[in-house]
Image (cartoon, rainbow, N blue to C red; front, side, top):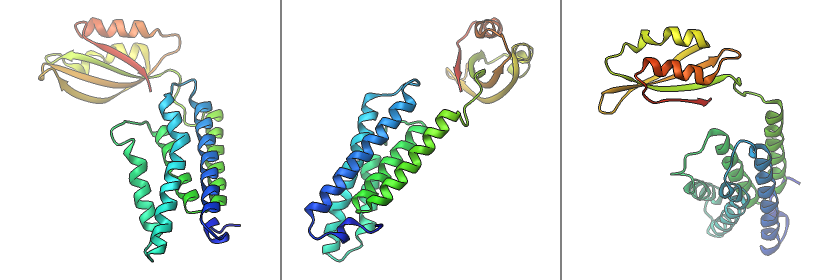
Length: 226
């Protein structure tokens, strides 16, 4: 039951078709769950298609390399893992992903490796467990930031004492505020401040932004969800 299909059946074509079928099924299942979870938060069609196709490509690559290295009496598993890892990460080396999306890439890589080596039962059990956990986390909203938490960024002139200038404003509008980062910009003429804040109930974001603009000489202010 937990043996590789390449060991359970004679020949190559039959096991290879089983590997391709399993990787296609699990790839589309992973892509569907990703679409279900991320549909309201924004996603790209290209990434959805990649999740559906990537396991099959990796599986075929792993299967072919593994079978060839076994014929040559080499360590097929080691070579397969290395080549599959390089192939899976090539698409994303210059494409920044958030941590959640990267989890799906790793899952697609796992499916491709597991099915490519012929361990279809392991692939189905592992994929089902991972996807079930993702669904539970999504519907229980585990780890989700508070709806009133924000990341606040704004510029200030270099001659402004930013450590004291915004204490009153942030205390008035926020339950808490934490200065996360300070960096210089515009050849050192400006400072960019990044705060993690939690707005008080019934506080208008616009009112806070206007209060900051009144103190930072109407320079750029931005506020995003965490």
